[in-house]
Length: 410
Image 1 (cartoon, rainbow, N blue to C red):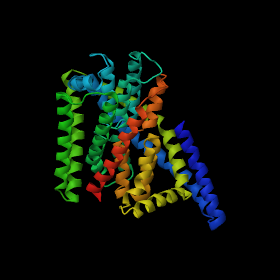
Image 2: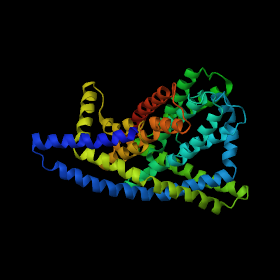
Image 3: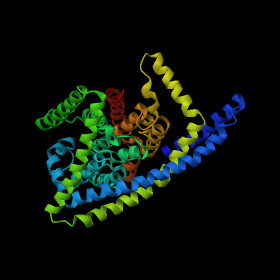
Image 4: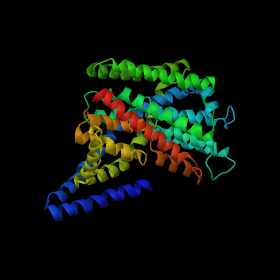
């Protein structure tokens, strides 16, 4: 519903702005430019969707190998002590723990569309434990905040978009996204724990969160000692090594369990193909809306207003061009994806704005969309503190993304 209003607003605002430019400024080129943008945006969206087909098939195939090879279950057992403390109201050993982990794992691998079915399954199981069927429980809210904070280890789709848009090193935003999404997730966990009176001051959580903070601080310190060229080279190399280690590791796990890894891969790849085809109309719709909005001059007016306010405050305004992605992300994943692609098209994939848009896309998730879909699937009407916690996590991710992008690419 929210995306419906946003999409309508794009066209109405674009039409009004274009009409004003025509009547008061004599700009007869604005309406032809808007029509041209509809065709070019449609073509761009379809080409991007075709590029995503292969990669989604690849990673869903690899995920299926890991699932059948027992690696996913092994990771679930490893994380069990943490889950028990973050979700104290879930009975120990309940099958929902596995569903939650699979959903988070898909999000961590950047497989947004693969994560949704797993998340819906987890919500159905959580609803079975819910004694008040129209009100969100604490485990539901913690689960959704972990989703909305966008914890991402491997932003696969973003890397593909960067490659599609001609980035020299599509993986150079890997480490920045990892850092930004960590701060977003950490903020979400802390805020939600405060609301729910979950005690994070225990040995397991202190070791987990403390260790993660030390690791991230070490990464930031290490990269701060490098010049920009070496920083990009190291982060790109680390990203590619980790990607290959995961692929080989999943395959070896499947071989160890005597799984037919080829058949398992094909099974998962079919799901990836279906997912890629399913998102084509959504991507075309949002890119056309954004294209018309930008061609009318409305986007330039909005960004110019924000940039002026930032400059008046004495701050550097270089980041403002990427803000549409950050502002859209809580509302719509496809909308933010369109804004990210539009930023790379307008400013260049390897520009500061292009890279920051990608980091915004990877550092948080679609808060309102996730709340609407997940809660709506089980009939939850009263969301309690879910929106507040989700948006605070988003804000932390946006601030972290800007600071980290200046550190890496300014």
